[in-house]
Amino acid sequence: MTDRASRPSLSTFEVTLTIGGETQTITGRAAELIASVAVHEAAINSTPVGKAVIHFAEGRAQLELRHGFPPLRFDL
Image 1: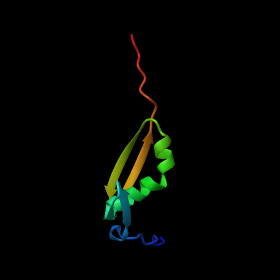
Image 2 (image 1 turned 180 degrees about the vertical axis):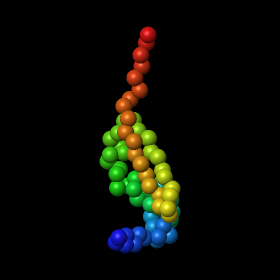
Image 3 (image 1 turned 135 degrees about the vertical axis):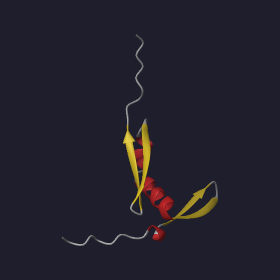
């Protein structure tokens, strides 16, 4: 069995976020999630219907993006 590559600690994640001229520094899980969203910005913005699911486990935060179809309406 080989050892897994070491992962950075959540405390090392840092993101600077500017909203409406106000800048904040965000760290930890929140920073990891914001970075994940930023990396997939085009896909998120182009999906008309979807769901974001956040998993917290084993010292990691994982963002799962689920695509969906627009709702269908059946009049019977």
